[in-house]
Image (cartoon, rainbow, N blue to C red; front, side, top):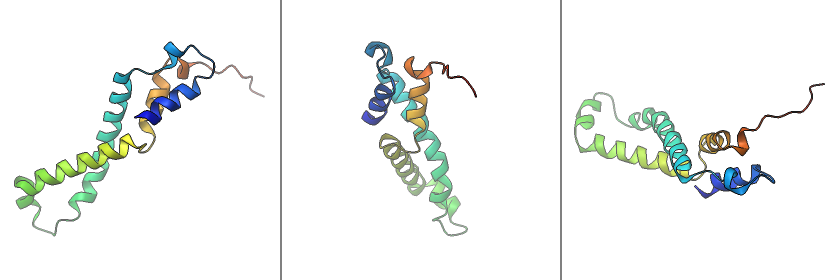
Length: 107
């Protein structure tokens, strides 16, 4: 989580620190969103470990619940360590300093 906050503060440049620092709520929501996306991407890989025909047995038993928990924990851990960069992009775009319009002329 610190890397997202540091990245948002670094992109602020000389802007007001109070307006450029993302709120903890925004950072947490961005990481939760990225973790949920990663969880959905990891689900097919985790279910590929089951031999054919055994998916129904483990999905209703403790193996399915434990596998879901492991997938969620992995996705959350990856997101907190940087993940795909989705969380940092969300934080950057939703902070006032990261949402400034660029006024460079097009040549």
